[in-house]
Image (cartoon, rainbow, N blue to C red; front, side, top):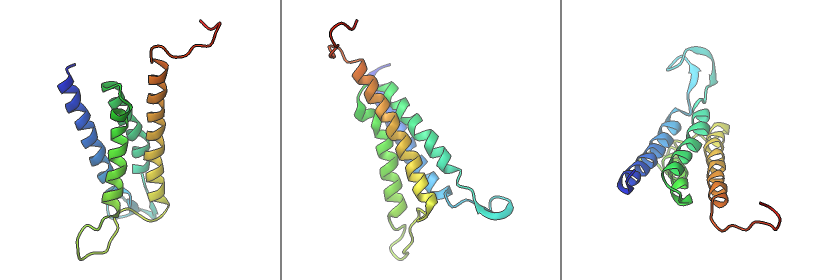
Length: 143
């Protein structure tokens, strides 16, 4: 794969991370209230927390497969986090005072589900890169 193709694919992964953060923020208030989902007691259905917990480390591992740089591998996580913060806490309009990201357990779980699993995936990339580095220290007697 050429260098230009890798750069384009890395950019597409970052765009996908941003779109994913926006969609997760918008679908976080999903409830069984009869509006979008059936009426089943009006309890919350934050399925996007599971989506964030699965997709964020997946994007990181895809980026790591395209580049050996830890920064390139971590970029989808960074883009996802920054998009979530900017889109979730910035006012959508100048006259409205609303915050899009929910200020309860669902917002915290969305942030934790995506950021923690993505950080674990970045740590795995760092460990793999350290293990594959030539000339690393080997204790005496270990072959």
